[in-house]
Length: 212
Image (cartoon, rainbow, N blue to C red):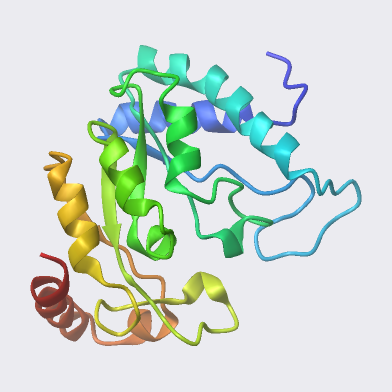
């Protein structure tokens, strides 16, 4: 079908088809940046600074994709990213914004991702996690390093190496009735280069001590 808003609907439908083929529990959606800004890049010709319009486009895309996903038995999960990624990766910056969109659809059709790295700073996050009861499709953990590296995408650390207090986050998620997996998701060049057996052993210790 025509795609007058540049919403990349075909690419997203292909991802939904792949998720259905894999019988995935959900398909997490990182909703994209301001028009004309690529991840980690500079604004290109045609760049638009209209953040409100970009968020409208996300809502329009979701309206097209949610029924398509539901027909294939795939649950979509909106993942808000830390505000430092708003320009070039995701114009949804808070769990509240993600829920405002998700709540237009049945909970089994559109949920949300709670990622400690992205939501820990938000003073509204305890309230919003409670609001997300029945909609949490994934709970992800990693720590927020200070100072951040030059490539902020790789600024995640092993739990206990940064500034996040995981106890209240985990307790809030647990209180919603969420019983799914807790995913340790660490983007960090040093950890990727380390011995994988040592990384796994450290992760198990830190998870038990800090997260659960």
